[in-house]
Length: 188
Ligand code: FNR
Image (cartoon, rainbow, N blue to C red):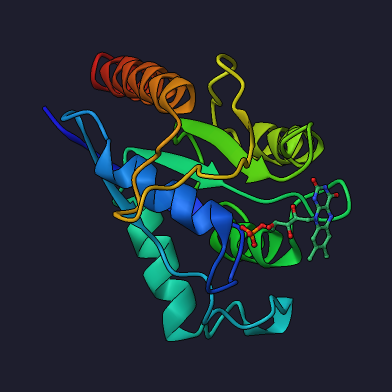
């Protein structure tokens, strides 16, 4: 059994370290997880007036999330919170009221920054939002990744062995988490 995972990256920057981290995670995904990045860079700014006539990009995001069995958020920290582009995407797919694409999807959060706290505060804000959206979110291991010189190999994989091993464990735990929730839904 393999599970489709929507990977949402909270940075639009071309050289984003979080996009690089997401790409490395996709490459090293355990075989139960089929991980694919979802686009958020072409979403309009959320405006409730548009809910009855959503843009194609909004419909696409909602479909991709709805067709996934789990969501992995890979995000930088902006001013001790999540970047606006990520919150914009979350808001879009949460609406109209009662038709949220996120509801019930198991999630995990991870992020990388140069700072020692490695996006911890952004992740804590994000967890608050995900709790409201009824997304059971993996509690452990917390994944506050500090970027270091030589983190990425030329092929995009993680070059620092400790970090690579940690990320492998993180993905294994996430795979168990997604399976646990899929089984729970199947046995309802
Ligand atoms: C940052 N950065 C940052 N870093 C951090 O650890 N805590 C923070 O609160 C912030 N705040 C912040 C605000 C804004 C507007 C910017 C542009 C940057 C630095 C940030 O971690 C760094 O730019 C990362 O490289 C951003 O992630 P991506 O885009 O490389 O994935």
